[in-house]
Length: 210
Image (spheres, one colour):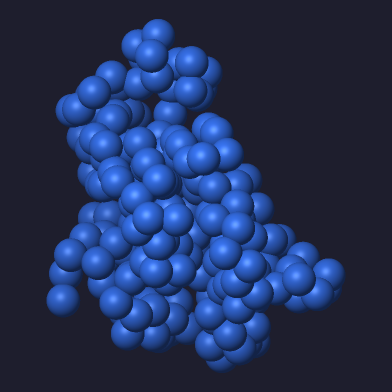
């Protein structure tokens, strides 16, 4: 495919990182362009024609334009016919996608207020009660992940590394990097270290830390 894949979005975005890590695992070449806060505006007519939600990432390839990070990851894996990251067998695939959807609809919304308050220090997100509620809710969702990892003893959807680990691994990094009180979740910590054995996670998942 060469460099026909363009990825629009700044590399610090958690959702852009999903796509970059997926490309790393697939060995895909790409060209990335900086869009988003601090870079080219996603609210310009040019960008809104690509994604009316004004969010990154967006990819462009010979098939056209695509947005929504988890969908992009599924698309790239399917395009490469990679069945390790996303199985074709219905039950195995559903288990991977179940956790990918959980990450998008349950886990990520739980940390939205607390992260913006504690990491980005946004002055509009400094209500102590809402911060406390956000931290509590975030930790509760991570407790669900702790229980699942304690059962599998390896990765989120089972014994093998899949797309579910790419999207959830980045959320685990965000949880660990946010200055707040966290419960003792040994399975999550062990999982984080297991992911850190992968060069793609070290490059795109843990903020460049060794």
